[in-house]
Amino acid sequence: MSLLNIIHYPDKRLHTVAKPVVAVDARIQKLVADMAQTMYAAPGIGLAATQVDVHEQVIVIDISETRSDLRVFINPQILKAEGSSVHEEGCLSVPGIYDRVTRAERITVSALNAEGETFTLDADELLAVCIQHEMDHLKGKVFVEYLSPLKQTRIRNKLKKHLRETM
Ligand code: NI
Image 1 (cartoon, protein in one colour):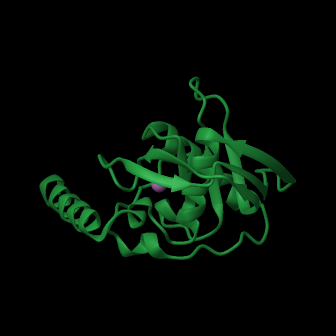
Image 2 (spheres, protein in one colour):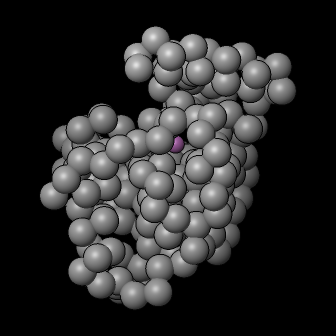
């Protein structure tokens, strides 16, 4: 396994739309393993392939306290979305920025797992938020795009300054 480089907003590559995975083969399984290791090391609770500059529909999530419940979503699709709720979100691609986003409260998602098997999952609370956040990445969307234009400008300027200071 290897750690992957996470790209940071406002990098334009974060706006790439991911393509469906054609076959869950050894290459995709290595990507899943590397993404999981990268997410745990960060540390974060979710990571989309877009964030490591791979533009295929792969997501890893682990919202457990013990970091022992890895969930893999390949080619995810939302079958049903109900209600709405507001949560404070952050993102490994937008370090140090947290803000409130409104999303569906409950979702039903279907996807392939790391073995290439189809599964369907009902999710609510943090898991539902996380799945929707990561699926947005696959569509080229970063959570700050839900915020006001003024906030987005402030965040871009802050992260550009941060980038200069850490180079
Ligand atoms: Ni994110």
